[in-house]
Amino acid sequence: MAEKPSKNEEEYFARRDAELLRQQREAARKAQTEAERRSHHMKCPKCGYDLITGEWHGIQVDQCTHCHGVWFDKGEVETLLQHESGIINRVFRTVMRGVTGAKVPDA
Image (cartoon, rainbow, N blue to C red; front, side, top):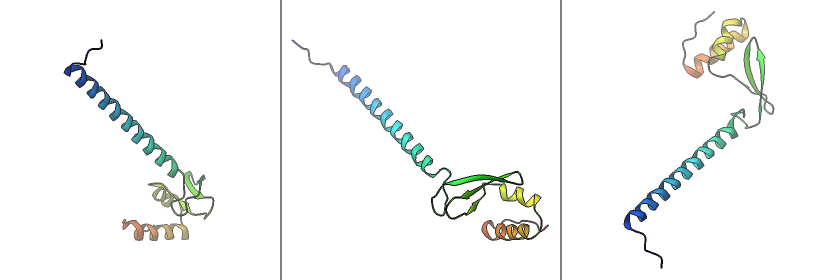
């Protein structure tokens, strides 16, 4: 004849089940977060198409394969401004002032 589990056994299995459920939920949350990150990685912020990477004066520039927008990572425009001169330099400096409010010295 089967014995009824003791109160301690019931508590043990309840704690174990709760811990397993917590671990499964955490693993599912991490997998969902990673899938979300991968779905945006190297995608155009404007239209969502793929970005390709090219090099311009030693700086990696991302360009959209659809809308042909050009995207810079943090610090890349500042690096470019140190090497460029002429109209492109003036345009980027004006954009940097307008977008970020950064105090970008004139060349």
